[in-house]
Image (tube, rainbow, N blue to C red):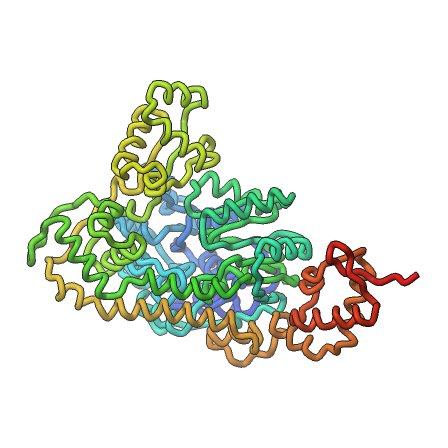
Amino acid sequence: METPASILEKYWGFTSFIDPQEKIINHVIDGHDTIALLPTSGGKSICFQIPALLKEGTCIVISPLISLMNDQVNNLKKRNIKAIALTSQLSEDEIVNAFDNLQFGNYKFLYLSPEKIQSEFIQEKIKQLNVQLIAIDEAHCISEWGHDFRPSFLNINILRTIHPKAPIIALTASATEKVVEDIITNLNLESPKIVKKSFFRSNLAYQIFEVEDKLYKIEQILKKIKGSKIIYTNSRRQTVELSNQLNSLNYQSTFFHGGMNYVDKMKSYDEWLEDKKPIIVATNAFGMGIDKPNVKAVIHVNIPLSIENYMQEAGRAGRDGKKAFSVVLKNKADVYDTQMLTKKTLPKIEFVKSVYIHLNHYYQISYGELLDKIYDFNLTDFCNHYKIPIVKTHNAIKVLDREHIISLNESFYRKSKLKFIVSNNEIFTYMDSNPSEKDLITLLLRTYGGVFDAFKTINENYISTQLKISLKEIISSLRLFHSHQLVSYHGSNNNTQIKFLVPREDNITINHISRNVIKRNELKLFKVNRLIEFIEDVTICRSKQLLAYFNESDTSNCEICDVCISNKNKNTSTEDLSKEIIDLLHNCNSISSKEIISHFKQPKDKVLFNLQLLLEKNILTVTSHNKYKINKIE
């Protein structure tokens, strides 16, 4: 008879579990609903894969990312375990064949996105399966208190209705008590067993630096820490610009962001994974499912979005158990901008109400009226018409969608993309024949590098502003280029549609959701404020602060974060520091004060004081290039 241990050895080649994997596996085998709270690299997937292999039937795995699903399916196939992922890349015929294989081909794992479950066709097919386990990966996505909430996760509980006897295991690497409560409620878990492993990472040094010249600091880090690295930024443009800057400095770097097409994303990911380009500059779109053990450093160029985001992203370093670093670079402007941007873009209830009323006026809907009609919607035109800010309005409309006041189709969340599909010569010929379009084509070629090789995310509003041509004319020209087969253009607003789900009642409609809106805004402000408190607190060990956020209080100082090192160095005597500076300069011909300060984990004033002391004692001298060196007296 096979056991969890024999399955582990048979398919994975291991002979023992990582604590507390075995405990979680036994709960699932016994048929209990289970919540597994394991840190990044804590071996979550084994916790549902082994119970599934010990039981007859299929395990359904809900996962938020195609790349995450594909990675797990490929890893299972390498172990001769039958698994399949139903992604948007499959046709309807392929999906039908997949379900036939699940029913009759002894497939053990079916990977699905939460969006796929909304399909009645998929639900009917799932009813025909012998489902013996349901696993929810990245389960924090089901909670608005989680750092990556996705409304589609709220509908996962349909699986409990379809297969009420199948136990559910929810897995996450970052969940506060409130998130755990939401997971239990939203998944209809019955007296779940909650198993948690400490999020403490003894090998990961959390370090936060206040710097003005971030590129200079990044260079220092890259010189000091060898190996694979992730650099996170908050904007797509910055990923490209920073990657190009690093490449110009002879570093092997690539970039990754949500506006890239699937092929380009996988090319960047594979180059980084295989260490062809050991540095990847990315937005937080480069996230869940990243499993590379030898990442030596994760660098945040901007302040992360929340403590949960930070823990997830920082936790991608040092999965091999060797020392690694999480570095945040910040300055006073970053902190202020983060607070102001959050407040500026949060749609308060009054603004949500005004947007809702504007929408009804825009489509001439009378009070009390509800028409079974779908309307075309262009966010930019709508905002221009009422002279309201685009980002804040976008967020307000998302609130109305989330609260089921209106319904938006998926294109509302998409960005416009464009790719040239003809040669240079054909473009020049086209411009000669259509001189009125020359400026637009030239701007596209100048602004979006690589637009011949792959789809690029474009901003029609930016193009409109640069050329001083109306947005409507820009979109019309781009559609014309598409029809002439000059480009392939997929506009973000071309197919955006909106449907009203409740009768228009203005104040009554919005008052009904006001508590949810206020609560959500308070939550976002709370998360931002807690993050800033963490970043600015230089008195308590970083690891202690992070663990306290997740309700772990029985912890000791990590001894390797910037706070712990600073506290150690405060006890370093002036004499000791002077000796260390002299030792450093003996190994260097000459070095600037800036470089000396960056070398030591000491307050800037203390280092400068010691330098001045050594100058006065004639031990050091300053060169004509304002660099320090040992004074060699003849």
